[in-house]
Image (cartoon, rainbow over the protein chains, first blue to last red):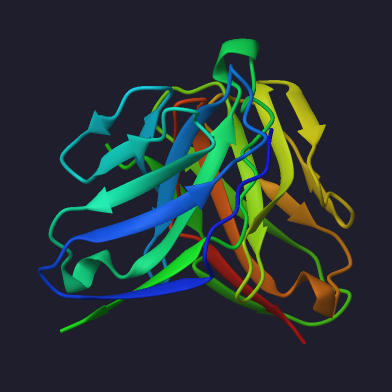
Amino acid sequence: DAKTTQPNSMESNEEEPVHLPCNHSTISGTDYIHWYRQLPSQGPEYVIHGLTSNVNNRMASLAIAEDRKSSTLILHRATLRDAAVYYCILIALLTGGGADGLTFGKGTHLIIQP
Amino acid sequence: NAGVTQTPKFRILKIGQSMTLQCTQDMNHNYMYWYRQDPGMGLKLIYYSVGAGITDKGEVPNGYNVSRSTTEDFPLRLELAAPSQTSVYFCATGHNEKLFFGSGTQLSVL
């Protein structure tokens, strides 16, 4: 799986939108972009994933650049409960990638100020 | 529907002791995974299994053993515990699009 680059930490205010960037300049055509987050003292949880088009679900939105070399996870209205480490991971789903486990980097530590 | 259940939640071991970390899933997934997470770091894959009777090494398998006799259970065995194995251990199940993680076992080896 190709590598991703994320900022070590970001800070935002409660009830404001948060844009978490991820660079993946070596992404291949079969790589899906996945986001997980890890709340304090918990295991990671799935947030969202996409291939080319922007995606929305109840937790967040995923905006994917046209050349797919970067993506942004958008939390529309951050709450204190969104304070977590957010991981951006590429998975070659179409060629069986991910079956042998996901590769987690250090992620972005999101701090939410009240 | 409990998802992924890990026991114990906390454990302190002395150097050289052995123990088994238990992981059970009720989601009927074939794939199961064991990760460890050191402070301030991302997760590293220890072992994984694609189905009952099949296991494979991940990135950091040394010092650990696993077995997969049923779809539901995937225990992780530590033989001769060492301080370097002090970590938080997470079990996960699922496949490709989505993994589901347990709440973790915090292990200290002193």
